Image (cartoon, rainbow, N blue to C red; front, side, top):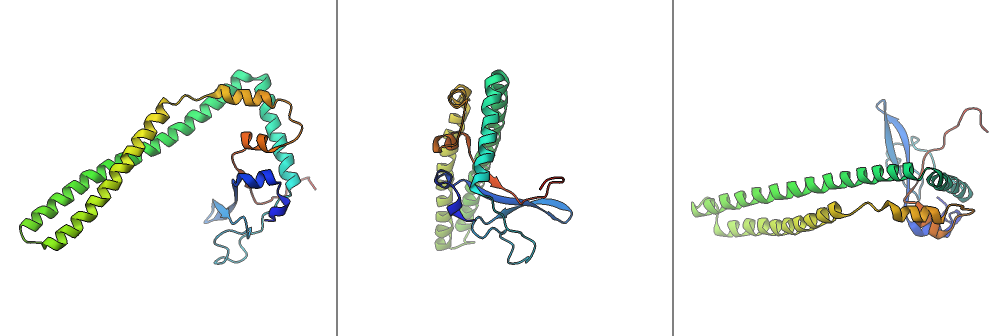
Length: 211
């Protein structure tokens, strides 16, 4: 990818991801593309299977401006429906994050319970002479260190989950931004930061009846 052809305000975001769909074993697979070499990571092992990916900055700007205008116009004339859609999406994303965090929290607590049992067994084996004092101390220290890290992670997760559950989905603040940019003529860094999270560049495809 030629970074010189990308506007500075897009380069500053550093949120570029390149990927394409490729059929492997009769299934569509999403292949991550190196933004520098423009080929997938497995290209060196599978010569000829990956093609280059590129797009002009003028095309990126045109697409972004068109799509952002669609959002602002829709929000302007269908505000309540827009709010409902944003809430639904944000709620879904939040629930997904919470599920992942709660799963990690549960796994961490289970691991600590298992570590306590392991250390107890080690202690008994040491008393019975099955393992030396030196061996016991070394293993017990390693498990203690792991448990300390797990306890720290559990505290972080519990705090994060509590904040996430208490956090209100503030759609009104986003609506204010949409109203502010209701008549966008051209892109600028503030608009990009407000509306764009990531930009994906996929493999180009020939569309029938087009040049």
